[in-house]
Length: 142
Image (cartoon, rainbow, N blue to C red):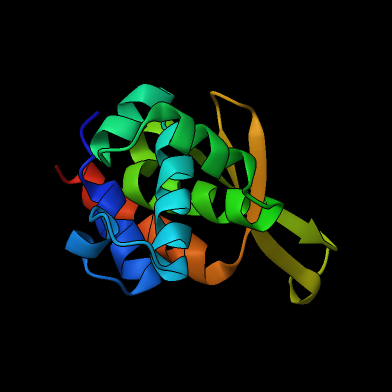
């Protein structure tokens, strides 16, 4: 996949942690949360547990346990971060119009991110949708 190297950069930026610490053997709560999110992101991108474990020098059972302990909020965050890392290749972003179609003053839009592999959908806040749109524009230029 073209953007797989972006995953750790997105995780590092989101959690405000140096990349070298995320892949280190250090065991703090912050690092555990960042790694678990990274495991989920890679899983959303279709990686096997073994491949994810190898990336972090961990056994696949460590990855399985971390993913099983993830909350719904963790899973939603991971889906959003996966989209930021690989939106053009693996995710669909759509804009939905709501409200009164006859009066533009009462119309609003929402953005929905869909993982076609799992059919999971997440409503996105505008700030995340803007970043994904930016990423899509950047990637289309490649």
